[in-house]
Length: 499
Image (spheres, rainbow, N blue to C red):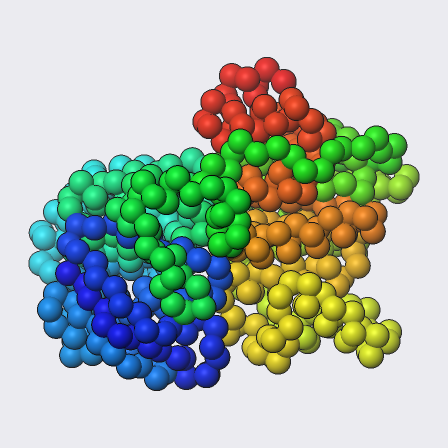
């Protein structure tokens, strides 16, 4: 059993966001609890109380008591908590210590000093229960986001803890991988494990949670049974800053308009090996210019590779982009394109948030650039983060800083790879508004996303990629909505191929 009594916590930095106040919570053995609320409400901090990262790793002012199996967490050593609580973080890369999948799964067992035969038995059991046979012995660097998340879950599972704590595990996953994640959680439930999940995407977990805890400004504001939560009105969920419980049956808010300008893609081809299987293979493609084009497809379908080819980041890629009558090779495309990567940690370079945006600007008028950068940050709810180091921010805040840099760049083509991963409803709306503003400035936007709410909010066109090929693309009309809903319901195969 987990019991939290009168707990308040403030991080050493003193920031009120993500802090906790007067938390009282009891979680019974075998219970599945969903933690929800807007970014900064304290969900992640609460999970850190349970897995011992507070107070053993994160410093700050802590009052109250946290009990794990009847003993205060502060009286354990962190290595003693590890076999009791398995943790899966938002970005699985941050918890990997090996280069291959098999070694990563048994890494925790090795740290516990288990005999080799016991480790092999646990590896076999975890592989069977989580259906990972096809992932053994593979390079972690070659896995998709969903596959990495499966390995992170398997590494936690192999330790055989009684409790699992997951922090926004679905943020970078496609619909198919979320289904796999749900099956993992259901497997743990069948073993009577305690499962605690902090999450923005509610639709996949709420039907299986025993309790839903709603948090706001560091406090527990309400608790719901599964039945009570599923009956909440969609308008009430929006007021609470929560994502939709059924995001797949929405309707587009932006109607496509006639657009005479277009961009032409010719002979796009890319493979990681000189004569290997093509990751991108697009003989010709005509797309509208100055629109928001949503790109959908399963993890590993080639969406990010296509984006890198489009903006010229993969120098070995072939093909040209014709824009405004000019044929642009990879080098020329780099000058007119900007890409916000899925893992934004790769493109945060400066010492504070304001400088991060200024780095993307032309620098001709420093004062004007500062004013514009501050306006962009204000529109992304980051005004209070101007002087903070970008790497000190939460995952969602980093995402918004990278989006701000893209807006500040003024490039003609801007590509966003999962721009709303880890974002709550309010910040998703802010991002969609920024994208619409860019469209109104005649920018062409490509939006790789698994987020149906974002697609319906701002996309005017849609394209579907499978195995590096474009199976269909069209304006965001009724037929696109039908195809989109089929994709999200895993019925896309036959109908998508027929387009």
